[in-house]
Structure formats: C-alpha cells, structure tokens
Image (spheres, rainbow, N blue to C red):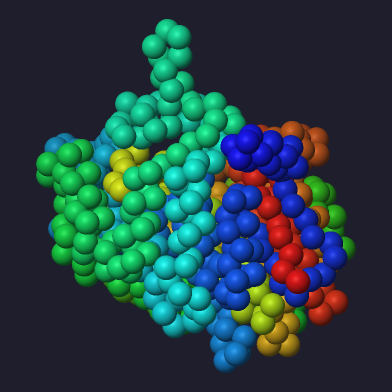
Length: 564
C-alpha cells in the first residue's frame, strides 16, 4: 500500500509538473523534485533552518535525480545569514586531480579525443567531488539540527524506494553507453522479453541500498568518512576499475577544501543583484549582460517581442564572447572582473548593438587587466539541478549542484554517480601558440556556468533565483532577473517565459513556443536562428507583502512548498 501511495503521488506531481505559491508565507522551498522539497519541509518543521534543509535536499536529489546532481559532484551556494545580515559565497566546485595535465583530453597525435564517450565515460573525466565538504562546512557554521538527523529522509527513501520519474526515465532512454557501464547498467535498466536492456519504467520503485549505507557512514562519521574513509576507498576503486591509470588519489580526496569566496554583486536598476564569482562564469557573464541592457527601455518591451529577443540575444553574444577568453579559476589566472564590469568598457561593448540589425561578427574585447589567451572550447552538456530556500527567520539559500552529465562519468561508487566535471575544461589547451585560460591543470577548478543568485532591495532579500541547463544557465537566470525587476512578474510567470539567447553561433528560440513565429523576422534582421528544446529548471522565491511566494519551472518536475 505504501508503494502504491508513493506511485500515485509521483503521478500527481508529474501531471502537475510545477508548483506555484501565490499566497505569501513566512518562507519558501522550491526544488526540482517532490521528495527533496518534502525532505526540506520536514527538516524545517523539526526546527531546522535553511542550511539544514539544504543538506537534506541535496542528499535526496542525489538519489532521485542522479542524471543531474549528486554527492559525487560539486556545487555553488549563496547563503544569506539573517542574524548577521551577511551574504556568503561558498565554492564547492570539483577540482582536477593533482597529477592532471593540460593534455588530458588529447590523443597521441595531439588532437582532442571524441567527447562522447571517450572524454566523458570513465575515470578520465572525474574531478574531486566537493558537495559533501560544502554541506558539512556550511552546517558546522550555520546549522541548527544535528548533522545525523539531516540524513534520515534520504536513507529511508533509499531503502524503501521511490517511483521513477518521467525525467529520470526519459534521460536513460537517450544515453547510449550508460547501460553498458556497471553498476549503473543494472541499477537503472531492466531486461525486456528479448533480453535487451531498457530504461526502468516510469513509476517503478527504485531502491538503492548501497547509497543508504554510504549515507549512514557519512551521517555517523561526517565528511571525513567521504574523503578519507570507506567511501573514499570506493571512489578510488571505481576509478581504477575503469582505468588502471586513473589520476585521482586518496590524497586528492583528503586534501579537498571548500573555498569561501567574496560574493560578486552589481546594481541593476535600484536592486543589488548578487551571484557567484569565478570559477563560475555565471555571475560575471550575467552582470555584463544586465549592465549592457540597463540602458535600454526593457520595461516597455514585451518579453516575447522581436525587439526584446534581438536586444537580449546581442547582449548575450557580447558577454559570451568575453566569457570564452577571460574566465577560469581565479586561483590560476587573473580573471579581469573589474575590467569586464568597468562602465567605460561596458559602454564600448554596448555600442556594438544596432537595434535594427544583428551584428555580423562579435569578437572578444580587451578589458583592463586581461591576459592574452585563446578561446575556450566549450562542450559542456545541459544537466545540473537548482533549489532555493527561505526559512521563517529569513535565512536564504540559492544553490546549484551538478555531476555534469547526464549521469556524469557513468561510473558509480557507494551507490552514487561520479561526475564528469573535468570536461568543463577546454579539451584543447593551446591554440595558435596561445594558452586557453580554462585549460586542464592539477588542482584547478573548471569554469562553470552555474549562477545561483540572490537579489536585494534596501539590504533585504527580495528574490532568489537560479537554474540548471549547462551553458544556457546564465541566460535563463539573467532573464529571470529582468522578469522579476523590469517586468514585475511573479515567480510562476517568470518560469513560464519562453527562452531565447545567443551564445555565439546562432539565436536560439525555444521549440513549441510563440518564439517560432519570430524566426523569419529575426532572420531578416540578420540573425542566424535555431529552434531548440530548452531544458531550464528555474526555481524562484520572491518577497511579497512581508512574505514569500515561489515558482518552479514547468519544464522540470519541481515542487514549491510554503513555510508557515
């Protein structure tokens, strides 16, 4: 009966694929999975805060959304501590093994290897995971409930099982190599009457006892168990089984550290918008776009008009052109943040935009303090997960986490997926005698597009936003900021806006939306267009009448729960 009830609940959530809260409440929870939202709500009801809830959410997502995120990956978190009125930016990004070199993804002839499966599948692509260390470090500093208590829901769900969601099933359907890699092939696929492996059906109860045992160890022994104990051994064994020449060592795991960075903030209109600094390119690229667009009358443009699509796409092209050359791990290169955001430089870049015609070519600029690098070869895929929490005391979390993927490297250890985050580095380290800033180096963090964001008005939390979606994340989040500020939309209205952007090759228009009708007009303006399916997963909280309302993207399986 219990499984039947769970199955019905999953079907209900699938048929009501996003949540929205229109009546303000003291706080809000918005995640990409109903079980994760419920786990967080249970923690809040027990007296926990936003950080406690974040731990519970991530542990559940590792189980229910293994195609996108997990404790075998990394994350960026923005945390607003209401008591101290201070914003914290926590970098739990994966790192390259200390022995990694810039030719990691090159063959003997010095040419880049095939992305999938050669670069992705197997030990070569796995970075040192950062999520568990991030969760423990933030919990030690800000959490209220006991660490062990935060694991209960995820452990129970792992042992009892959960109904497979449409998103999980559908992702399994288009991965050609996952079914051949064990143990993932046996966990996530079933044999049909002909003996062929097929994705585990929607609604089937999926258990993961090995993940439950891993969580029990970490719950009792802390992050040290993950990085130095049995789980660490399991990670190295999995990598060595895949490739006896695997570079990651037990010392790499033991030496991993989370970095508490200074948040990156910029004024947009009268709002202070804050996001992640490098090694995420998210905040910096988004701020370039917003500063370029701030001089235009966005408020009086309709979100789906050709004028808005044109302006937004051109601003995106400009910012992404600079992103490709100048953004990487700031502990390895000098990222010219001040130069890229300098008002004179932004004014210069804005002049590229002709409101009636798309520019034929947009190249990178020359901001103050920039190094002499070549273009990053970006091939990351649109996976990842995002959630937001505001608790009753006003503590707020906007967190984006990932295993890259889908399903990371396809390898597993301790019941969880290991990331393929090293493919977020440029596979080609040098072009025409110039180094690529985002090339592979030992202990380096690959450039990310993750853009967890918190917006402030008069030094008070006004809104939280963020999304999965690979290199498109930045555009999803930037448009959500515009939707909340310029267009005055509620979260459920923002998440339903159709997507458009240009990351350098063509103007992308979301498939099966009103944007398709603009294709001819945009092409007549000089745009090269492409109709595409867009897989955003925006989760948003917005302050309203001394409370908060929330929204979850209809393109995913999110659930919003109010905190009273």
